[in-house]
Image (tube, rainbow over all chains, first blue to last red):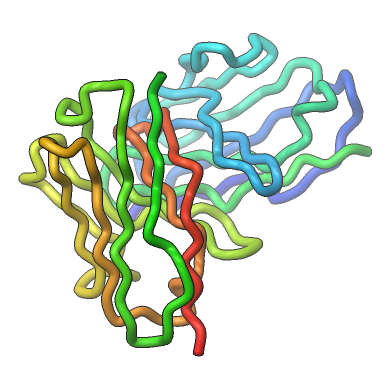
Length: 107
Length: 115
């Protein structure tokens, strides 16, 4: 099974900060990597697919990069509505696996 | 509008069974692979099952293999998850999600396994 190691597990940041979250796969997954945002009590929302493609309607301050085993989600300038938990997902092979999540809190 | 609506959750005793449904609308359901994902209270997301667009290919997470069965009815635009031999650790919100990269999710249905 492919393990997805997401870091950090939690972080605090301020509005306007640039934030980077990393997911490392235990083996190569090409670009079969998606990023999700989840707010408390809400449904996960896909932000990025195919490692770097921005989901329609998602603000351009979100970006994704990487291929193979290392991937990053970057928020260029944090906005108040971005404070949430973020998950990566590998869908290269079964069982699909999510990262453990990164909780982004206000500093 | 693309929509997925889960139903069938509830309170069940350990060892019991439930059948979840996911009704799809706003897209050609028969063209999409589908997944079930769950989230235990206060925990992260866990993929549990996949079914191909035709229903011919199915995968399960080890945590549910042999107890859960995924199926679909493309004539009814519906996805199902039959859950047997339920355990306390199966308590979670269950989501259906469209496609391998899960671009669309339902609102979820809560399953509580408790005596």
